[in-house]
Amino acid sequence: MQDQLPARGTIVPVICASDKTQWTIFPGDQHARLLNLTIGNIQKDIRDTPKPHACMLVGLFPSPPKSAKETDLAWHSAVGTVLSPLQNLDITGPGLKWNFADGFQRQCFPLLAACVGDYAERVMIAQGSYCSCPMCEIPEGAPLGHSTI
Image (cartoon, rainbow, N blue to C red; front, side, top):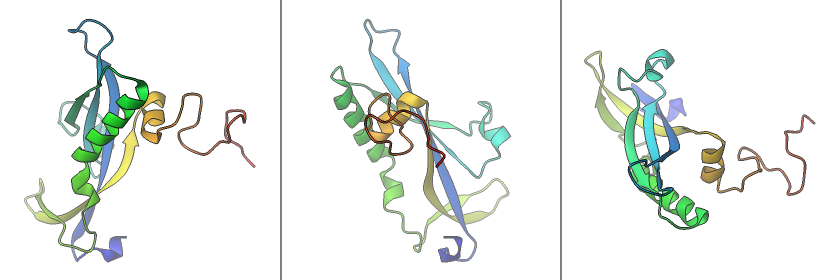
């Protein structure tokens, strides 16, 4: 993919992380889902600390008080809206011009590289069901666990 970029073009891997959080100021079991973004070109020891603001909250999505399926669909719709600029970015096109800390301006091509979350988030993202593997296809009724064959 790097050879398809224009000269001096930079791929920027976008990493999104989501998690469910309780709204303790409201009565009942109301909750919201957070969506944080960071980029993979930042060193891990800097990216994983809260001080340098390398991870940004880009969405706080209240979950509707409906069934779990409707909540999942609402989350997918909201995240699709937030990440829609990444869908239409052409790797062979002009990209985006970003200013970097070293003072240079680079032609960047952000690509969704990973979605980070706990088991519940991965199941929701994969639109699977609990007690299933959100990472691979395991036939229904088969014992859980990854086959080494």
